[in-house]
Length: 169
Image 1 (cartoon, rainbow, N blue to C red):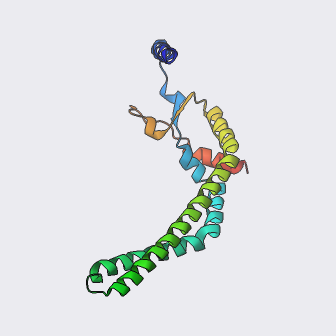
Image 2 (spheres, one colour; image 1 turned 90 degrees about the vertical axis):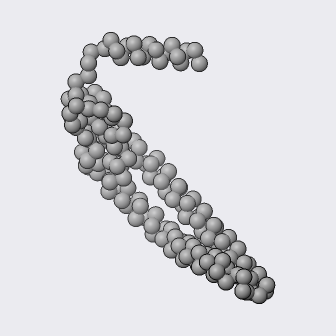
Image 3 (cartoon, rainbow, N blue to C red; image 1 turned 120 degrees about the vertical axis):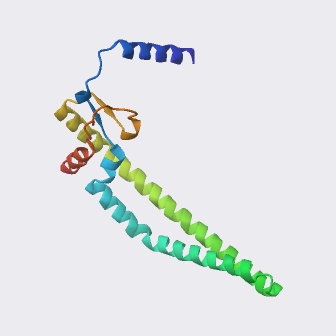
């Protein structure tokens, strides 16, 4: 821990004594947006929709049915016979279990698809970013949310990185 503190103090001191950064040397890049706007990402999302679309639709219908059953039980439960209330409660539990199972399947498929896409896209994204940085002579790239203040508009490389990524296909 002590080494971390010493390293942090050294880094701050070094940064303070370094030459000021020129605004032209700094640019912003929303790498998530750049990546998600690529043709590869759109294709991957389309493939995922084809894989899980039916299950997602079923889960949505089940979710609506669950809400209807809960509403009916809440509104009419007091006037229902015990047998009717028990039957409705059983249906609610059964549909709830099916809904949860479908939800987990869709989530799992989405996570697998995202991981596969990111694993394949990362090297290409790095190449695209490197090319754009080199083309513009950028020294520092920050995420848009990381900029607290700038007295001027910083160049935004996001769209150009997306175009470069698509050109690497």
